[in-house]
Length: 365
Ligand code: IPM
Ligand code: MG
Image (cartoon, rainbow, N blue to C red; front, side, top):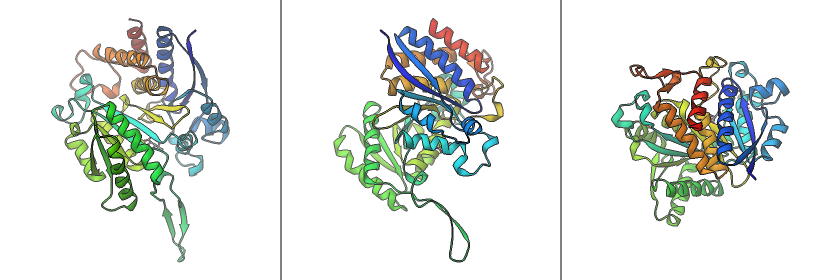
């Protein structure tokens, strides 16, 4: 009997449905080869959900996600919904899903692939060999802290408020995830905060230091977030695993992503203490190229690999997908976003569907 997994698919908006279709094809081929069976159900999130139901996160979507073994998301958002009130925006649906599934740990790897080194905007010698992991806290900090809102002052002026807040329990649980990941990687953890200015960051730093003795094999360091941003572009190879709060992690993971040359290549995993994880590309819904068969499906496919590795404990199937991605890159297939100028020789400009077909060929050997 094959091992059966219930996987909820959230294709979302923009290029989402095109890249999701490629990932599903890949999963179906891999499942045959590893004696797995996927029961896919599709649900609405983001703009697609707003159009169909009025809400960016319909209750039914949260319910079907909760009942599944893993959730695979493509991307949400688009110009069409940009001016709606905040509670109806696609992003609010994504934040509600993260909170609803209590996915407090967001793993964002940034690995430079030798085939794509010239796509990076940084010099080859700076980025060659970069292999880092940003562990971002995802259900706390300024994204969720109270009070929040736009209030009126006594003099009748509007005042916008958000609150950066972390409890000890929230810092400790993300800290433990990060130390454990560092243990499995290069055994170096850098915690990023703004402890020179913010009280919440001082507590963060104190707690991360308090956890350190439990992980004597991990070398711990701390950086202020402004310095960390600078170090990431100056000398990214000094980093192995980074851990930081929600907002700093949002910003630093985009910087880390771009070291690799294209955000179109990077997957992510969001995990809770129990229940299904959520797996999604770091990039957005790219509404400017939606429906034109130009999208790069590789981050979506690599997100499916992360789902197999971190969500379903099927590392062999995950590795097979990752190898297939290497193979198509070695063979010269490139979507527009990873076709750097001046390296077009021997490269094949490839659409989303053709990239999918090349992956299936690689998987079938
Ligand atoms: C991300 C995105 C989201 C975030 C937005 C779309 C809400 O930028 O996943 O990094 O800020 O977390
Ligand atoms: Mg972001």
